[in-house]
Amino acid sequence: MGESRQELLGWLNNLLQLNVTKVEQCGTGAALCQIYDSIYQDLPMSRVKFNVNTEYAYLQNFKILQNCFAKHQIERLVPVESLIKCKMQDNLEFLQWTKRFWDQYYPGGEYDAVARRKGAGAPAAAAPASAPTTSARTSGAGAARRGTTPTTAPTRSTVGVRTGGVASAALTQELNAMKDTVAGLERERDFYFSKLRDIEMLLQQACEADPELEKDEGSLIKQVQAILYSTEEGFEIPADDGAVDDQETF
Image (cartoon, rainbow, N blue to C red; front, side, top):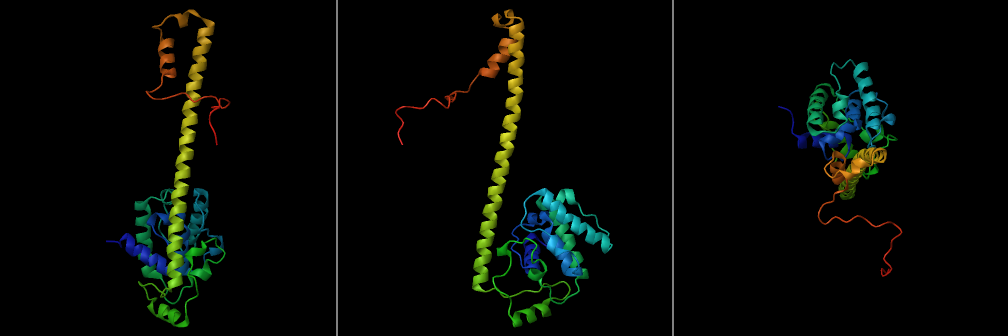
C-alpha cells in the first residue's frame, strides 16, 4: 500500500524545500521534475516553471520530465493529459509511484533543491528564509539515505514565511478558480443568448414574409415567442443605461 497524501507531501516538501499543500499541485509538473532531478541532477531546472497556472505551461514542464524518462530509460508512461487536469487521484497514484522509484534510485547525500531551481520561476515563499547552518546541512546529509529525506530545522522566520506563503498561494488559487468559473459562465451565457437571438430573427423574418402567421394566437410562432419573451416572477427588465433616476444622489 502506498503512502498517504500527508506522508507524501511531508516527504516532497522536505526534499524540495517547497510548500506544496495539495497533491493536485503536482499536476503542474514542476515538483515532479525536481524529484527526478534529485536522483539524476541533470534536468534543465532553469527551464522548469513553478509559478505558473496554465495547462500550456504545465505541458512544457512535462516535456522536460518525459525527456528525462527517455534519457534514463525509465519504462513508465507519464499520463500527462490526466495529470495536468490537477485531479487528486491521478496525481496521487503517480506521486506514489514516483516515491517508490525515488526510494530505489536516490543516490543519497545532500540535494540543494533551492540552488538547483534558482531562476526557475519558483515563488519566493517556497524557499527557506535563510540558508541552513553547517550543522543542519551535516545532519541533513546524514539523514539522506535511501528511503529517507534530508531535513533542516526551520527557524521562526522560516515558519512565518512559509505559513504566509501557503495562505497567499491558497487565496491566489481560489481567486484564479473563481475567475475561471466566471469566464466560463459568461461564455455559456453569450452562447445561449446568440442562439435565442437567431431564433428570434427567424421568427421575425417569417412574420414579415407572411403577416397572417402572427395573427393566429395558437400558431407555433406565437407559442415560441411566448417562451422567448416570458419572465419569471419578480424579474424586472433592466432600464436603459441612459435612464437615470433624477432623485438618486451620491
